[in-house]
Length: 275
Image (cartoon, rainbow, N blue to C red):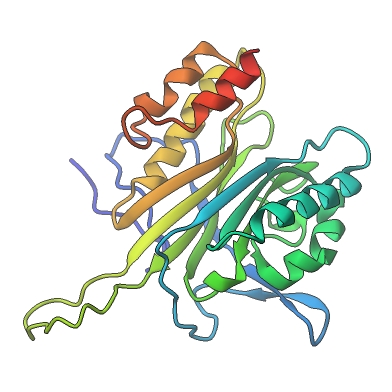
């Protein structure tokens, strides 16, 4: 027997599960977004569900960039600044907003992220310190940069902690509402208002290494797939570091019904890591 869709509130859409289903990750709570206030030179929280009403803009197309910073080598702040500078040269000419997914950001790097002029001007952030990571105490984590142009489109931000992870891995989700376009057609009084469409974007860093990491990645991505296919989610996308280092990783996209037949974002990455 299938349960009804479960929601913590009207702005968090959770998967539809059977009674015996179990997911590797589950959201703890809704998170804030943070926006830069030039009048005070500070990053201030802006709760997606309670911030002053901003009319959502049409989302006809979008771009997504992802970057694993690698927390282990030295000069982590300088490397993050260089990555952001490079991303700025790639993203600024685009005609559409681009969401940026960052993985393995060392906790020492937040100052470099928060002080970057391009980030301050163009983006809201899911995190401004490691305290908002579900795995608080880890040396590194994920951060998503949400284009400021989508300030009125962002309806929820939440994290799921992968409970079986030995490396403090988690998934970070951002939900964007796509307003229904006014076609000019007359709506009959008895007809329901068309519901806005929700696009869900996940930022992940799946379990590393062979051995116990191989089945862990399957469980973790299965959990992400459930959230991306939850009721009322119009479209979902997952990006980040999938660590596709095992033969079984090559089948994950098709096994979990990701994307369209014949398309897999993991394939080029898998070939690269196996060379």
